[in-house]
Figure 1: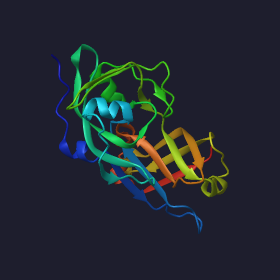
Figure 2: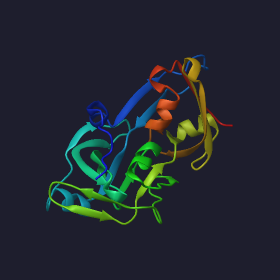
Figure 3: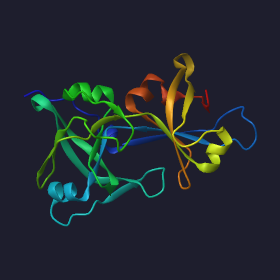
Amino acid sequence: MSVAPPIDRSQVEKIVREIVVQLLGGPTGKPELVVSISARHCHLSQEDVETLFGKGHQLTPMKPLYQDGFYAAEETVMLVGPRRRMLPSVRVLGPTRSRTQVELAFTDAISLGIDAPVRASGKIDGTPGCVLVGPAGVVDLKEGVIRAERHVHMHLRDADYYGVQNGDRMSLRIESGSCTTVYEGLLVRADETSKLEVHLDTDEGNAADIDHAVRVELFKP
């Protein structure tokens, strides 16, 4: 049986590594931008929570995420892909959703042998599945494994500032010494409750050396 390489515990325990970067050199009143790195994780339906952790089980919040009302849960699951390749401890994020969804970075998907497509969150029809293993049971997920499309959450007032609307596309420039990178095509997700936050996966964050970023800029191309 092939097993994925050991995972650093700090990565497992710290699902979302939030890097808050004040935009330098911008005009007064420019919104503060948060760039968050989302490690592999899953969102579960209540039905699947009870299958995996026991009848009547409710997710236990461990750490709040940047967006109000969302959190990393105490619960983790084992994720098993084709040919029995596995990730032993994948964090569950709450609250529960109507459909279970697993979000992986490209390297995670390669390790598991899953051809995970890039999709916006919730757009899981026709995607590959996997097996989720919990302390009380197993879920044979028929679809729901994706690579999350890079995106930016924002309040409607932020959308007005940048001159964009929900569903538009933006670009993100990250200056990190010799690793300056521009990511194009970030999906704008604007509503009346969200705070300004870009979500990248671990591959994207590492490629841009986001931990050492000295400046980030979100802009409309």
